[in-house]
Image 1: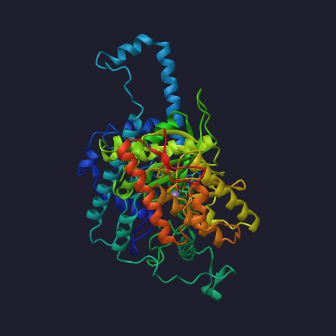
Image 2: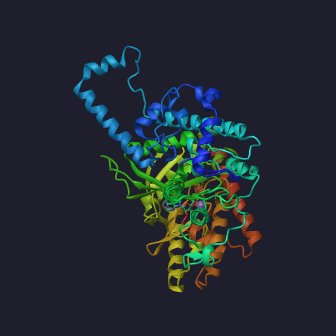
Length: 558
Ligand code: ADP
Ligand code: MN
């Protein structure tokens, strides 16, 4: 059903459709995009991805004149999971075919492909991107055509239904501009008075019943207002449009299916955040993980930070060497480099990465953040500290177990209201974890606060350890002190009477015995220790062990 945007009193949709057929010119006559090679369309259709075409009825005559035939208007957009499983099915089929007809395949591959491991798994993705680009271009052209044809005429036509990308699915900004261009605000019109319930109005000879064509037609038009707000009914009321029952019912049907479709698309949009928040290369990486069966579905975004985006995903099949948790968190380290500049000090001075740092390009440095998080999580896991379990690291994408349940992430300590009992429990557990982290993992969290502690299963879980450093890091002790301040303040404010202050906590965690009783002196001593460490490293080229159980300053460790 063509969308009706006629704005004067010329008639119903049938009339508009007529106008649209006689007046409009096929976009294929002009637009470059329409004449571009159809190549990307076909592979898409075969997997049903192209599908952005609206649920329109049979298109007008010009559509069938398109050189590559009528677009597939019946297929609907499908989810990532569907695409993936179809892709998987295809691959399996290919595999079978390969096994059945080995020589045919060999011939098909021909003498040109010489590499043994040519990776074509991203071809679909690339084709999809091409298709998306193509669709957008096509729509833009359609819109230009629309504008040109409508010009100043009072009756305007809409090509909306022939767009590849449905407005709900696309950037709505352009649609908004279109709407503002509308000379008549469709919502400003006076509503005609409605017929009283008794089914007739007037007196004596002048009685009109509800079956009266004019009244009924007007009423039908007014009833269009009840369609979903997204369903654009145009200015039927303002132009005193009379809709026959038949047309009204057809419109209603269309409105309902539009509503359902829009809901579906909306859902898809929510779920495809994963695709929008990351760049194409990352998207490919994620697709591959789903494709490989490692992940079942990527359901949505949990958090968007300055340096990373975290997604939730359902785990896929276990492999021989890996058990995939039922729910996973995917941390994508952003490859926009600016955000990482101020983090240089964490990694540049980390001796574990020192040699590599100078030789790396910025993209690789971002991968190192992911790598660091993985290593640090593994250390913590080994020490038995509650934290996400590493599943896999691919470039700047880290997959780990999900802390939470049924897609709902465990709340951060800052967001959860604990009973005083639980608060106390959480405090002692945190103290314990900080000690374990320092002594057993040889790590300082370096961003520890109620923002990076989750409350799950009646205990505190530590997350976000990409910036964690070893205590011998030139600023390691300062970072530790900052952590201690955050933790002490949080639990003291939380009403834990036993909570140590930051200086006591620092000593309790590090085993150092800094005696200064005020913050300034305390910090000065910390810096002196760090300097001593650094000198040692300079002189001996070896690291120091910062932990010493008898409270002595760090000593050279061999
Ligand atoms: P950053 O703070 O650097 O953006 P985080 O590692 O702290 O990155 O992750 C951001 C948010 O994502 C966390 O606050 C938490 O809510 C959520 N999150 C991260 N990892 C997990 C996980 N493994 N399980 C559940 N939620 C997680
Ligand atoms: Mn965080």
